[in-house]
Image 1 (cartoon, rainbow, N blue to C red):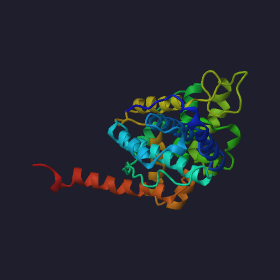
Image 2 (cartoon, rainbow, N blue to C red; image 1 turned 180 degrees about the vertical axis):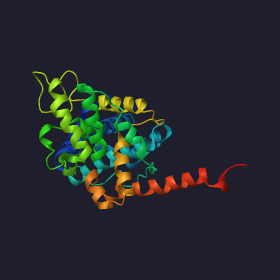
Image 3 (tube, helix red, strand yellow; image 1 turned 60 degrees about the vertical axis):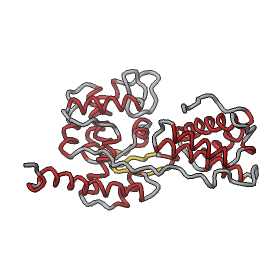
Length: 309
């Protein structure tokens, strides 16, 4: 079963847009999440329409169950299935709350339980090699060095780094103001080495990238526009290869490494939660399992009783 990227029939679309408007304004969901929910609900609408429902008021628990079963048989990841179910549940509850339905047709649905993946992290040594991978004094090299230092120093999300503006950073005080998921604001420290790299970029790198149309975006490409998320991805990947790091390094690995290395060094979990911008401490707690797992791996590899004879 493939995603149908066409919009839902008109009779279904009105309620979908009403829900997404509510979620954007009242819950502050990101535009990426809203877009994903729209695709999921459009797909669900096409499915139930083919099975006789004329609008959401005519959708039955059997319709919803059939959709979930069809999804389960398709090649979707557990995370995608969980998101699609969450979208449908949100719509069903919204309809009840707005008194457009008397019952919640999703109440009895049971979805897959996502297995929590251990975050991919770099060792302290690998991070050190990555930080010095951009060499030379060209504007691009100064930008990339500042970008990598800030990424690791402050544990930003890729989207937060890509949308960073000049006015968000205070290098004298050593902190930046971030607007994360749901437009929630948080203050994040910027380390000493990152401050030096950022100052050097601002003084000797960024001015050479500025064009007539350039605004206050912090990290610029050669056309004077903000770096895209894809460009950030490629920058991290290219410098990781240049540094000779064996594992495939994704940008989020620097955020994970930031959290893991802080925790290993004795930082308080609540402080790490605040710096990462996690709404729940349970999200941050996954990092508590990273170091013990690494110890287990080292024990298995190096303990003499574990070696094959």
